[in-house]
Amino acid sequence: MERILAFGCHPDDVEFMAAGALILLAERGYEIHIATMTGGELGTPDKPAEEIRRIRLGEAAQAAGLIGARAHYAGGHDLEVDYNHEYRRKATRILREVDPLIVLTCPPMDYLPDHEMTSLLVRNAAYIASVPRYDCGAPPPPTRRFPYLYYWNASHLTDIFGRRLPVHFGIDVGSAMPRKLEMLACHASQRDWLAFHNGMDAYLDTMKDWTRQQGRQIGREYGECFIQHRGGGHPHDNILKTIFGERCVDLETGKDCT
Image (cartoon, rainbow, N blue to C red; front, top):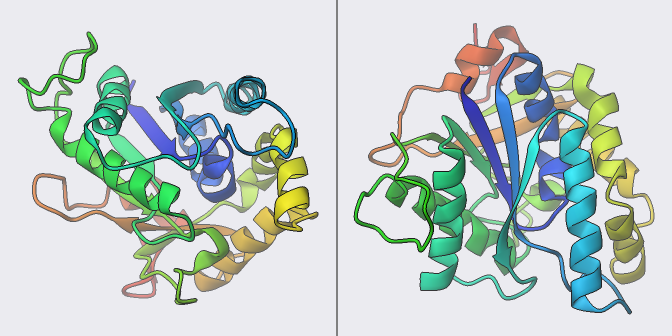
């Protein structure tokens, strides 16, 4: 069974931006893994870091379990993600443990440097995890191949200058929305935190709105849009287009991916 890895920065990132695609992939028989770089240790106005990490990782595991996925924690700390040797090793350990066919992660351009550094770390790990002599300090052997690598859309659907990202294609996730909402609802502590810090009271409604906006880009009710990494080494054919067929819309041509 081929494996899919969605690797975010914080415990609810994947549920916001890519859970619909994961639900549909799970329905097609793929083994799903969801990783978080940090434990969201600072996503609280009053709880100790160790306590909120335990809570948030528990919520992540609960959400993953709804679709039979396995949750992973890379060991990073909230608001301290950096492109350095230790974080490169953390990311590579996850890639080697899962050895995925497809990797989904944060976009290179996002509202928070933690997200952008996670994107760079996962991108790097997807390339170097197959290098036999790279020592990431853990027993999993090198991966067997370069995975397909994709970036989901930015939070708020824009970069820091308010521009839309140059997404390549979108997937119709309408049928997955009830389960996507159920997965995000598992993250009750983050819902409370965003209401406190960002004034975002409508946690689930915000996700629905972002997914609805992406749906409009592809002419469907709900959608999730992605950018494919086309750098050297990684496959350039788009396997997600092949998997999803008429559920997928190529935004570069405006046509269904059939």
